[in-house]
Length: 92
Length: 394
Image 1 (cartoon, one colour):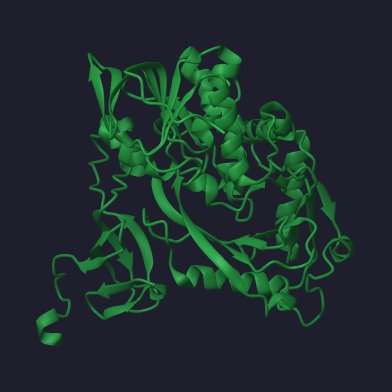
Image 2 (image 1 turned 180 degrees about the vertical axis):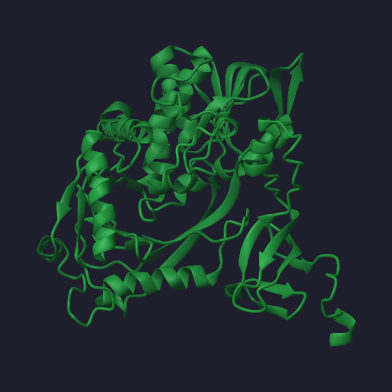
């Protein structure tokens, strides 16, 4: 089972979370073509290695945040600090 | 069973991926279209990926006519596969019983049965009493947490020996002169003027006029080498096997509510699987709680199995499309083709997928069975949204 580092609650078991998929930049819907919009909706980097992805702490603080995970080894590290989140150094 | 040839400098057709789909494609290319100057390259060993990491179910209980037609053809090919390949793939049409645990689920099942019958696929509604007779071990008592209210039978569904399917296709393709190159990993593609001309592999450069990719969970990784993106997410799907037991389960059993599928192998082991792991992964191993949940589901339906021990479990990397339907199509590089998106149900599609992919590689266009499974259906919004693709969840 993965340990997911919630920026607000600290590391918790994977079962408290719901993965929300890799971070994909959203194009401007007013100017993007159908092809680009479909690419945003459906195409994925699906990286074999380190990726940035959203997780939701569904059964905890309910916040959405970004972590880094290696999809080959399942190693997990926090992403950049979230505004308002507990600073890792203060917790220690 | 097959030769271990030295790779030649050039082939007419080269297939990346020596799983069921790649090997079947090579076989049908040689048999149906007389294209025998073919090589299959495999980075590991034959059938060592998802072909050897599934629960071996074969069925055609799909909702939409497009998918029903495709999977029914594949099932029909399985019916004579042992004869075609002169190799026993142990196809056993023992039938699939899907159980409903609420009137609402039974309503959905009735709709599914209607659709299947309209598609010309066998399906028969079952009453609670029918389930009792077919599955005496199923907990139908009033103490049961979920009360069985009926279900349906897909009598032509069954199982086959997964290794034998890979080996049978490999042996038959080899007999036609196809070179099967194991421990040969693709490292990149060579192209000029937008047309593919060869691959770089761990065994050196190999030229080919046409190249087909059939690498399941690693589709995105290989597509990256060729410079195009795919609507694919790779997830782990786990399954497990119990210690061998005397015959107690004569059909395959599925439950949508519990997201469970289980059958008993010829060796007596219960082969079961559940929901996939929720995050993308290439690790070929999943989270423990996913197994725990699948085991709990099994015990909800068959409480009497609570003391049965699990012998082993495994995880495969499945290639999921947004609509759970496959992709058999050209790619942006001319001469390069891909068969992917088989997701959680690729095993049953091996003969059908192989034939359609062989047709595409031979004629540069798909056959009537695979016409809808294009890459560009996603930008047109023409999705084939098969909630039934997993056979259990809708």
